[in-house]
Amino acid sequence: MKKILVTGALGQIGSELTMKLRDIYGRDNVVASSRRKKEGQESIIESGPFEIVEVTDGKQISEAVKKYKINTIVHLAALLSAVGEHDPQKAWNINMNGLYNVLEVAREENCAVFTPSSIAAFGPSTPKDKTPQDTIQRPETMYGVTKVAGEILSDYYFKKFGVDTRGVRFPGLISYDTLPGGGTTDYAVHIYYEAIKHKKYTCYIQKGTYMDMMYMPDALHAIVSLMEADPDKLIHRNAFNISAMSFEPEDIYGEIKNNIPEFTMDYDVDPVRQAIADSWPNSLDDTAAREEWGWKPEYDLPKMTVDMLTKLADKLK
Ligand code: AKB
Image (tube, rainbow, N blue to C red):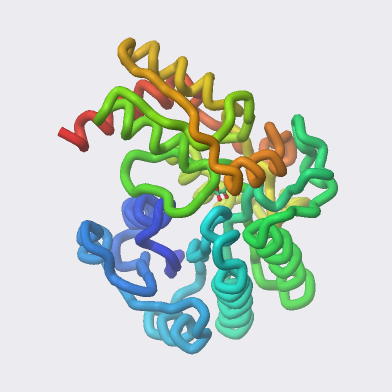
């Protein structure tokens, strides 16, 4: 039976993943952890075990792992791309030292580790369309640097110490439950909130900028499928390209407008986030994930939009 520790459990992915893992593996087998308690997250804190864990302190990770006899760590605590450019030193510390500490505890305590990488692990010299699984990775953000280094470090721990490390390169994730914090792709979440609340949105990403995106249920499904995948079939480990949809701001605007005809959008481009978006791929080739562990997304842009608008309208009532 899996005994799972989730770091960053109160974040955008963690808050939904923790609940899903508790449904699958049982509430007492999934320990949520975060560096602090957050208001509005009582359902996660109270629906199963919860621990305060600062990932930059390896001792705190080790104590939680020993206390609950953890055998799997899902390591989500990280700073995202835009916020990372504002404080690159902090991004390095949390993202790199956090992952190193998790891998060291995993080595000592015999745990498997899932760590998300990102489309940010690519840079301007990477082929932009249908970016291959194995290709040039020279990112130009600190977040991206930590993601590539994290992929390599995770593969090292597998090859050198036999730690069962696995990961996916997430695109921008879209969800209605918990807001993302400090990413470049966050516009694709904010646009739905503003469409429902004010029927208008000012977009900080320039028209024509394509990025890969994914609806949260597909992202959660990817994590569980890869964690459960037969290790003998895995040629790659850290990290798999996964893809569900690629769009630019006008595409998502048009799709929302199909559902809310009075919706309008204008632009006020943020140069920092635009430069980051310009350095990332337009779309990823996820053949390896499909072949090695059966990855297949369920949501495209129209299907996601209908679901997002329905669920958000309900939530914001
Ligand atoms: C971000 O925009 O920083 C993240 C990501 C693509 O990793 N959503």
